[in-house]
Length: 419
Length: 162
Image (cartoon, rainbow over all chains, first blue to last red; front, top):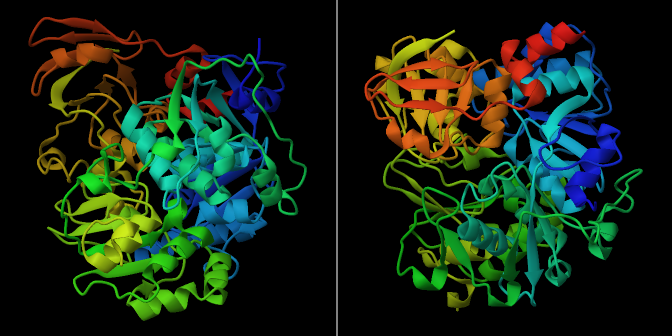
């Protein structure tokens, strides 16, 4: 019986010729990731096991959530990660500044994840790496602790949903519109315990940045992972970055529990209303919604192309007087490239605040926390109640195009509305 | 072993950000996490929850962030078992891994209300609503996942296999 991409990667890492949905397997891991929130408790659990780390080259530790540290408690968390990295000679520890940034931006950037590879991370957006044809999924700290010691994790092979992309992607539509539209269609538990496999001629229309954004939010549909096929764009991205990769493609008779169709040519700029990522509406249908803050960045939309999209719209315009616009490049490399391309100058001239890379406001950590009654248009991934601060503040999720247009007009807007 | 307790009833899509908001993730001390548990949707829970009380949610309980701080906060509140129509997958793993039984019962969850008293046997997966007389059976855990639960969590399970 044919296998899909997820099944092929899981089978190979379990040392099996084939697997099928529902099967319980134990897999060898190519990369194990944690951050400044999840690593410290995992380290504590790891120490209870009483074994050394399984491989100091296959562990990535990225202090990115509360960094640069916002207070003494979080400085203590980061110190625990740093001390562990030093004590265990962890090669891929990413110190603030240096060549670091947000975990899901830098792991692909540094080629630590890639086609055919299996990654777990103690962060739910680990699923981002499906964009480069890998299997990647989020876990908690206990799974992470055991993985640090054994290099293995157990999985139940998921059923898979095929997302068939067709049509030509219009200008002013990007990956965020695709994934928010999909979650709006299937719901925030539409892919619960399942895999999302992207397929169809529309895949070629999507840039790698689009694919990272889409795979990143597979979890917001409840998905275990989201995975893209390997094509010329993937090859161009991973060549020279990733060592020893093996692309996977679905067999012609691969099984899917269902197929969801999305015609890219029919998409419009969308926004997800509070307090679920599946509350998707077309921006043209929502009327006037005034805003107080805009955040452009995060593991979802903090890559160079995202900043290019925002800068193009904001160039020659001023951020609305009632709005604070916060731009956060996703990594030092993105920051430097945005500097060299003139995007940061555009942002600063327009009146935006430009920050060093951090997860910061996305999960209500720091760098843009809201008080009661405030509204933010954000390119991040979650709009749960209280996510960016006060329980009576609101987050509207959108792509960098809608975020940039909204920053200028002081209300949720499409890029076409910016003169 | 059967547990008996009063129900704290929540709805669908209870996310880990409301179970334990990120502003409290500067600590992973279970008691401190418990003191803020559910605060963004229920300011009474942390204050009034009693040892042995049972949490019951709707669909997709524990969605969102992978933070294991969420099931830890609930467990440290004295809640020995969570029942829901369905659980988000990372939360589900985390619960099993820390030895907090999670029972999935689908639409039957509609027959459990706030302040009902339940008798629950997590190992057998049986639930009796002592207030209404209804009885339910949870979906069984597959294969060695039940062994992890029986060992009291993944760390104990791994150590026992060494």
